[in-house]
Image (cartoon, rainbow over all chains, first blue to last red; front, top):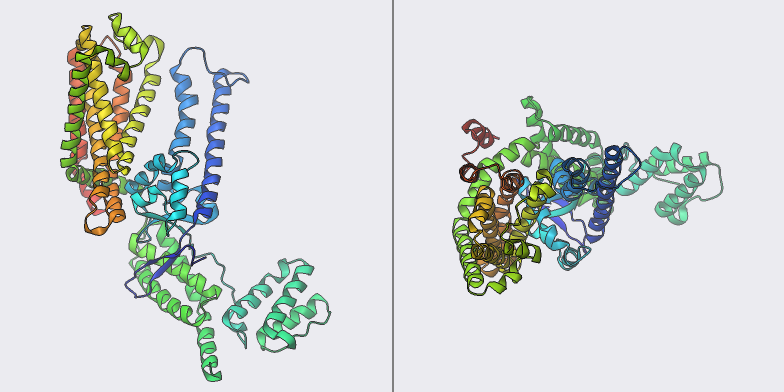
Length: 245
Length: 335
């Protein structure tokens, strides 16, 4: 993936650059679909509820003459929800929206920080161009053609979409260091993780995963004979704790 | 790799992974400081120490165990510490205050030559529209709809009795939404090397001139001026301002300079784009005036002129950064 969509590398005073993986067109389109669905549902819900309350009966019909209160209470809020959704939420959530959050991406500037109101405004105003001629044609084409997966709004605002590095994800296996033995660090992490999750797994998964791990790290020397769950767990403990079969 | 080297690497990796608790503490402190201001200086200083520690451990993890989850965790914690240390906590209020007190006035100062040129283009287009329709009245069909033409030919301005058909609130919102969209397009279409902006400025100028000429032919120019003066001063100024922002974007693409076309486009779009926030805010006010004051015959011309000129002065104060009290400006500068 890193070869298809490169990382955003940010210089640091420590000399160790910060690396943020860039989001590609797939993740961006998925986040947009979630946001689009959300804003349409919100806008429609507002319209339906407000129209029923306004009419005092189960009817969505607009009044025959143009009425200010109908427009202000029933028509205007859904329009505001639809058109200001991205700008307001990106401002309030520091470059995120519910869709982006669920996909695990966010908008950042080229120095990795959250974009300011000016940049977010420009980014969202250029949706007018990106959405042409239909279904984000210009934006999607540019995303595919540019190395960093940028649409016109990102180019104008100097923003990028990166995968979140939240600090809590990925989960850190608690006692991987004690399980190094003859395993390499990622092997120790896998075994530690499996033993940590052991109580939450169904019996078939416990045995299946333990078999795979033993096969991978011990190869032909692995004892893969049948046994109950406790036997498989003991084999894993031996692999992790003492590094032998 | 010799056995000794492998053993040494493994020992180093074990020592590194044993520091997981320290990383988690650093990540927790970063998360806490990222979301709120702290008065505890020690806590803030510790963040700088955490940052160095995470950088150190990440460098070792990248070398010793590049495919491990520990490295992924460290990348994550380090990136977050970097963002917290360098970008600080998020203060929406002070950010917006700084935008209106510093960034927008600075952008307007930068845009001055573009504002002059876009205003000139708009005025020339308006004069051209006036001259065209004055000389060839049939050409009004190019700029106005049949209802408007029929109404003026009957000696009646189309805005008369408008409030009997549409309430002021609805009218205001329709007008301001339309004006904001036109203003945003005038800016965005600068993306087409400035040609789109030129088209929007030219077309709106032509329409204004043409309609004034057409109403003048039917003795309604005074009534039209009466209608336009309260909201038009700001509305037309904002049109020129957003056109200027679009022209700056267009020029950055036509004459990119040494930084390259994309970099030049980015710098110009970002710098000039901030004025759109002021444009949108001003157009909301202009829309309200156009919905509540302009079509209402109870307002005399003098009141309309006072509203129009007063709102225009308010616009100048906003764009020059003088609208906010000095204390607020100082607070924004400190933030």
